Length: 179
Image (cartoon, rainbow, N blue to C red; front, side, top):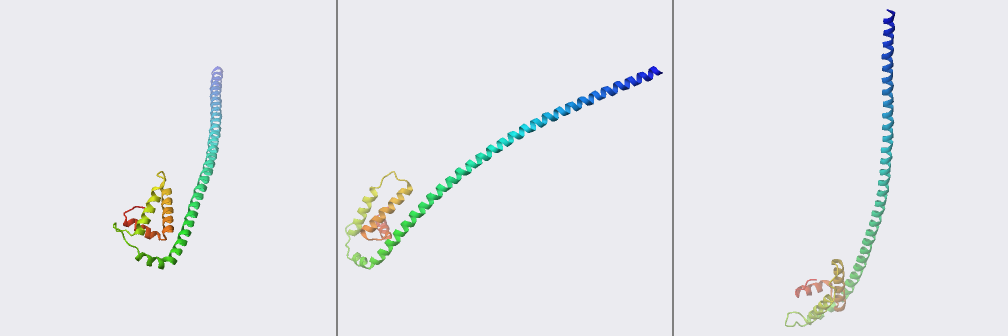
């Protein structure tokens, strides 16, 4: 009986030893997995932080470029507004000058004779001068440059012949010219 008890105690000690060994191994494996996970997490975190920093830098550069671009566009628009303001000032002065001259000009209009084409001699001169100036414009102008150049030609014609822009438009329309 004592051998049986001794044998039972020995078996119990072996079972406890095996159980302790398994638990110890599981603990080591869990600890190892935890260390690997922590290392992987740190590595991933470092990569994410690096990517975040590079994106922040890229965003700052893009923001600076866009700000510069907006400043340039704003400067161009301000220049356009300034040039248009100057043009309006010039037109206002011309209107004022023409409105002061208008009574003398209407009397001169009635005395002008018409030729065989139905245009007065003065209208024919105006059209000839206008056509000459328009044909002298370069063909490679952009739409904006062409509009500005046409307005300058109109200003020149109106100053030279002491007429208003609307009168010039009527003369061109009666001669079937497009501006």
